[in-house]
Image (cartoon, rainbow, N blue to C red; front, side, top):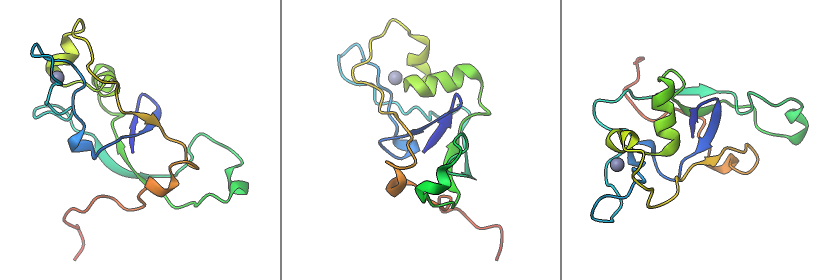
Length: 128
Ligand SMILES: [Zn+2]
């Protein structure tokens, strides 16, 4: 789950595996990751599952916070690059066609409940 440009999307792959969609001069798909070395990374954070909706309690949605890869502190152009799913090189090459469609699917708390994680990805705990 990724949040960018005020919208949450479900990614088809883990964040670090999201691949550029542009076509290379060899007519193959670019193999560079969107989360390229040297670019600003997002931050995993726990958020309420339904920030923008009211009255969802009656739908019996779980209220547990979900893990979201938050990209909203990145610059607008960087968030746009993520949205278009391109590596930094291809974000600048706007005439390069996309070989495949971007994989983003807008997040729906009902549809995607099974995909949501209520814990952050494992990393060293600050507490013993
Ligand atoms: Zn690329």
